[in-house]
Image 1: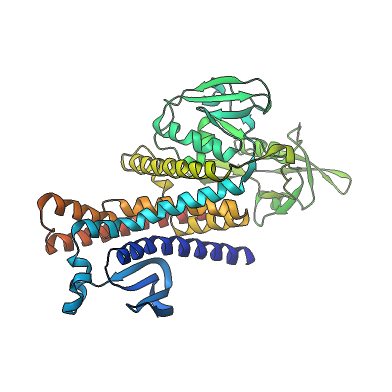
Image 2: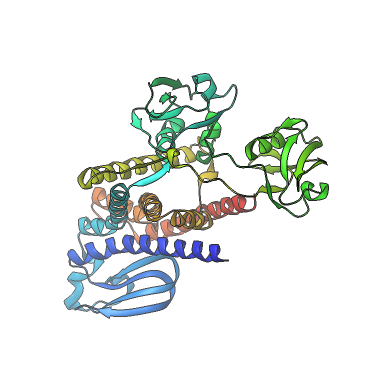
Length: 455
């Protein structure tokens, strides 16, 4: 329960910060351009907290439903306006001012991402060195000559001190199915070897979460003892008599050195009965267990229903930390925000054209899970998560969908071109279309969340 509450708290903190930043962009620019702001609200629904400040008695609100927010400005379309304040009404402003006020929300999301990345690079990020643990035979990685134990030092000229950086550098190439150039060595200081991976045959509908699996490699992980920690209820292992504390010595006569070998032995089979040699209380026990098939993401794997007793920590020599001085860190933050924006736009384009799976859309459940994991990993990881979501929020709001900021900006561009605002009928029809589009998009994202959760 503690983990659930921590995840929920991290999620609420994340979306509150990002919504507040977005709406503050609209608020701040509106104030600077002379538009009267009536209310600045983080969240929808019943107010939990409200106060009035300033000469204009602007109302500041924190509401019960934290999945959005808004800035309410003086506007003749929403109520009568006193004659002496007509010049401060939003609808009376020139199109350039209205454009700036609406654009400011997504802009502040990008600015926040730059600052967050800057802080991350100043503090420094610690991760696992990108060392190859296993190369799948006849895979793209195997064809390129990659071998287990090699360190990936650079991807297309970008230094890769940890796996996170390596994966982020690989993804754009995989999306475009362009050749991927790796610089590898037998150690992180050894002589380098240049390898080129041909990605032209990768599937169009791959999922970025399966990037390494698509390439045919697995990252190095610390070995885990093949000692049973949990026997799950109503599983083949429980029915066969496997107990907590059992050490798996062999499967069908093949010796087992660590937990990963045990997993591979179970999953690589066809579901036939397996003979387990077990050490239990200094005695040897022979058991027969028949794995059960489990389907997930269109693939069938086998399991017997056990979990390891403990997970080995990553040794210090396999960790790396990278950081930058203050000014170079700002340049890195700016570049990182640009790269993530371009990658997000590219991913959206690939999804629309069917070249990437719609399963990559995530809803509130997935975002909450990521928030909890990143917060538990420390402040730099949480800031990095906030930056990524802030970029996504900025991009999403700039899409030309009516009722979003991008839809309003589209109307203003039409107004600039034709010399007059779009008609009320067109705007009302656009709002209805936009609501339908958003409901469908959110429904798909929520469905993906549930599929991941229960899959």
